[in-house]
Image 1 (cartoon, rainbow, N blue to C red):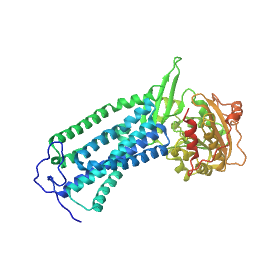
Image 2: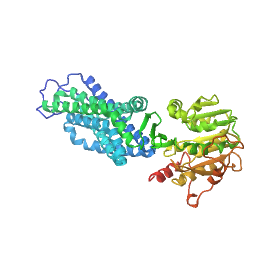
Image 3: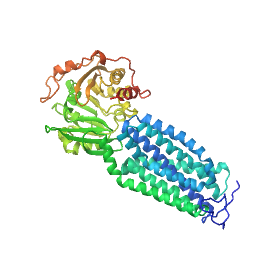
Image 4: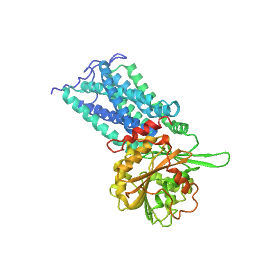
Length: 540
């Protein structure tokens, strides 16, 4: 390998121009200069991956279907990176100025990307087109970095192509590793989506522009150098100003997505939790809980949903009850109405949801402080993983999970999941699953019912009217060969506001237009339920 250090002592280039390759000295040894450029490569790669992950995560929060969102973002960005690399070829004649401009544009666009897409979703209903445009623009700028950085490295010290590419990509890939780990474990928990992206944009600007402009400062003219420094300052000013206003923007954008005033908004590592509260003219309070934008309950009619979910399952044996999901404690409240329930184990993924159900004054009052009951045991874990090593068998299992609109939740409606639940059922035990709307999403509803049967359980589907949700369905299942009897306990708890024997008898009847047989079984390998959900709910 032949190496040539750049000669020293040359004069500055005329204003607005870059000196030809090897015409200007660096005031650092070649080894230190290369290390500085490779550090910039490392930082820029970390920033680029954070932009990608931020776009993927935002889509999963706002519209679910994380696989589709990830596919759109990654495929568009990788394609755009190729376009950007080709577009950078003519820019290699003046790589210092070109790289500074590219990094300034990338820092600005990447830093503002999450905010822009949030606005497109909240006010313009143009999220997917905006996502494609932003992903392409960010990807093209990332793709333009590599050819320009290669040229800058060769200006410091000539290397054969193989060694130069190895050094460059080693720094790039290690930077991507750090960025990939920093996003979920540092940036997202501490700064959130919008401020995290803005902070990374500022780091991108400083690392990409300042390092290169300082290191190669004598290779461009005075006016061009001043203009580039001013551009970087402007980028940092825009990002800093936006960072200061990000809180107000997020409150306004989030409120635009909800009909009622927001009283609490919290983003956890698992989901976005929003609570709204409205007081009607009659004085009635309507408290609503949303997870990732999906309504979980309204205090006006949640009793209809939870009575219908819990009491048919507890008409059988109920000494030991397992609740999967239901972190709001409302299903747990219904379970604890039975004095002969010895234990109630609740498995919830998000510890923040449990904390909210315990400490939020109105939610805790709604669940009647169920978590304080000595019979209750709370486990914070993924229900699928926890079931694989469930410590005992249960007389009744209540599955109260969010709707399966992406692969992460669809696994909780899979034949594999129900097989694990069946294994955790005591002989003759009962299980009930909230199964969505047989009116708005009939294929999804009957897919869940068929999947439960495919796991070896006998089933009885039923549905009731919950005004906040519409026509809502459930599947009651049993480990016995005969289908379970749909009814109430011989001595049901007093104080039920909605459910009685007549309502349950009627709930097992489905009108002709609600019956569907053209559905498959939902499995981990083939999550058909996601396809059904996204197709059926897109116009609702």
